[in-house]
Amino acid sequence: MHTDTPPIAPYAIVALLDDVPDEGLMRGHVGTVVETLAPGRYAVEFGDDEGRLYALVALGSAQLIALHYAPVHADPPIRLTETEGDAPMLAATLPTSPDTLTRATWDEILPYFTALAARPLTHENAEEWVRDWSTLEEMVREAASRAHVAYTTDTADPQKEADELRWSGEIGPKMHEQHTALAKRLLDLGWTRPDMETTLRRFQNSFDLFRAENIPVRTAISQLDIRYQKTTGAMTVPWEGGEKTVQQLQPYLLDTDRTVRERAFRGMAQPYIAARDDLAALFDEQFVLRETLARNAGFGNFRDYMHREKNRFDYTPDDCFRFHDAVEQTVTPAVERIYARRRTQLGVETLRPWDTANDPAGRAPLHPFDDVGVLIARARTIFQTLDPALGGYFGTMADEQLLDLDNRKGKAPGGYCTRF
Image 1: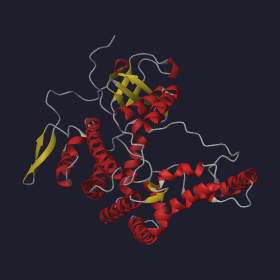
Image 2: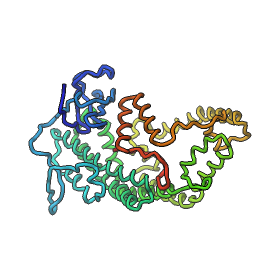
Image 3: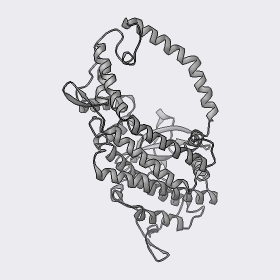
Image 4: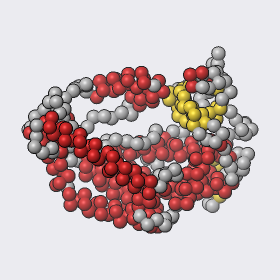
């Protein structure tokens, strides 16, 4: 029985203390903590000597022991907090949480990166150095994510807009520069570890793509993104004596009455038609900036640049074109057959855009929940039944109020692909 186990840091190397036969794991198997699911519970990734993942398991702290590859000193690790002239002054703490960085400026964040750049880096202390770097970026990126979520859920708030502009337009591009410099330092050292091969390859890719002249270009692109979110987040549609957002009209596309579906579809399109000139001008600016970003990095177009920036090492743009051709030859005819069958079922001469989501048999749309609270509770049960680890992730999001699923005026459309 293991008790009073201290918390295990993210990305710590751990060994199993117990067998987990259902996952093909035995006592002594070594893995990496990739996420804290709850206090004392972690998602642990196991890979072979060539870095191939073979298990991702939710485990309790009593099942794990953190491994160490360097001496543990009584004195805390050295990190920089401020400067005195040109010489760094060192102290013992990183930011304690993302909350401490909510209103931070780049001048307040930069010293932490400067500290890592100034610290001695050897094969003996690389593990600790990488862990500290990871912790720092984890803190900063979470603060940026929180600012982004706060703004996109309320695009009408001037303070939230200012915070988003600061994080995405100023801090983000400059942090990318520091990330690239630190990555280059690690690459120059030649340090590696079997489960870090893909990460190190990404570091090399980031360094190869970096151009200092793209920093202001990225800032300008972020500002355009915010303009788009503010414009679309404010869109509303008059509906039956009231006002609805574009997203709130989507359920009406399931209505059995074709006239209701058409009215909803045209209503959803109207705000975009009204904002056509503004959106077209925004996209024109975006296109020029993205092409500039690509050409500065030595690419002929933005598509090829983004393929590399997204670390797509295993396939090429030409592979994507071949996939597109396969879809056109195989999937498109199948879709045409499906639509022809739907047209017959609906008894209409021409299938229109508002005829593609409703039940072709004329059955009324389902109403599996009446409010967001019921949706979350039922989804939680489903996820937990499918996979306890997945259920744990979703439960954490629900318990920490990270789910904002209601739609309302001022909330930018779309979903998130972010980190906390």
